[in-house]
Image (cartoon, rainbow, N blue to C red; front, side, top):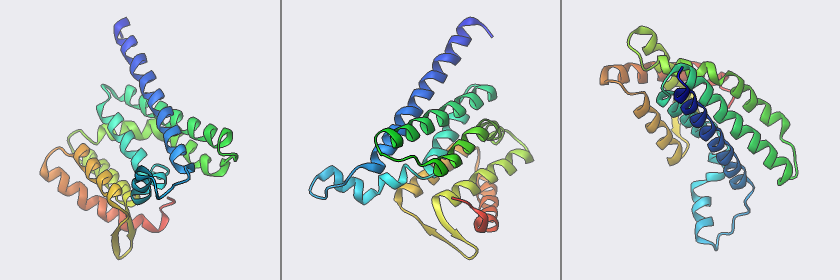
Length: 203
């Protein structure tokens, strides 16, 4: 790789790492903010439930999917997604300890585990935008994960969790879209996977 190429990779990775840190701080700040219904922007936060939304999985999966798909190569996708999750987790954890007065160790272990496997998942997301059967299987898997994290899914039902979660799912569909045939197969396969695995979904 040429030197200017290395510089671009390092610069992009640094920006994504810092973005993860800032979003981790923002997420934990929202989570600890004492809402006052007499303040207009507090009312917006209360109605949208942003504190819980940014502490949930769906929005972070969306960020990771976008980073992976828009990275120039699979290696960069793996690096960028890992650094994004690492920055977010470290910032969220430290903010909890330093300013929240507690250490959510068991909760954060799940997020650190996601961070460790995120490079592999990022590469799989890149393959989901290729052609062929493997691409369809992977894109169906992605849709299944987003259905489980964005909706309340049971063996015989699928219910809304909120408008923000629905927006996340729509954006994920837009990111994974290649053509209508691919999209319909991915959605159908994703729904089937979500219905099959909903009893075992840990989030």
